[in-house]
Image (cartoon, rainbow, N blue to C red):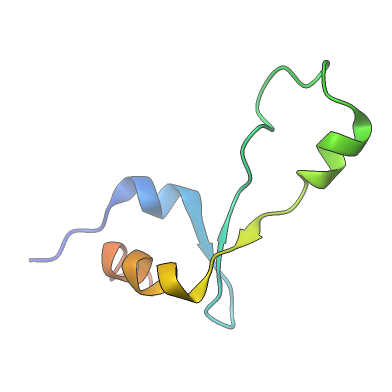
Amino acid sequence: MLKTRSGVKKRVKITWTWKIILRKAGKKHLLMNKSKKAKGRNKYGVVIDTVEVSRIKRQIPFSI
């Protein structure tokens, strides 16, 4: 039986066009010390390279 990796499942979002998006780091705490520009740059997620896509798809087989 295949099991999903729950850590990957929580951190990854799959778009309608099968792109995989990860949230950028550094947006949880200590935000007072960061400039508005730095927080804005960190607003959106990062689309993962095609090299990594197959590895992540193997880790979350049922959500795809």
